Length: 243
Image (cartoon, rainbow, N blue to C red; front, side):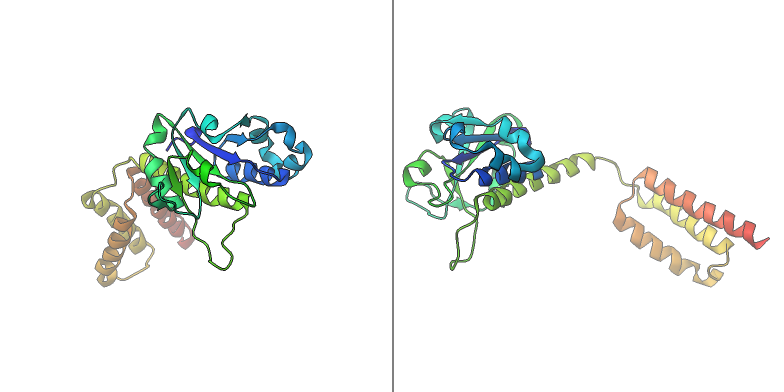
């Protein structure tokens, strides 16, 4: 997931403070590209900045357009947020499903997520400008979401997907084998025995315990070495104090 290729589009927002809150929600989730269908002169800069707090740069770099079509013309797809299914939109994706589906696209292309006016949401003709729909489930008794909350929920799922992929990449180490782990466990047991932690008869149970726990942790080589040093140093210190 390339977050720099994720575009948030606000269509006809009315309240300047909501735009500021959207900026903050985007910043919370590593998103920076804000586009607004409307005119910049329609908004109160001070009110935007009050709610944006330290995310005012997103507002400063926001782009303004006359339509969703113009705002998303450089994007590969355009997802409109809605509670209305409609005949042309097919299945509405949940935010987490959207994040999953757009992830590979963002590697080389932009994707847009569109949020409608605070009072009316996206109107039918505006949804027709989008290529797919996404919906945020909410209670039927009070289904309307605050604009910034809606942006936060969708942005969070996109950010979470990016973290998931990042962790998979960063986890590209080779966990130690059980054969290598046996050396660590033997070292732990040797040092515990030196300080009289258990009798010789309890050693096998202790070794089994540490093997089970550490194998589930999928230790890297450096982690295994660090654990060995900790127990070795602890045994050495215990021996000095015993003299």
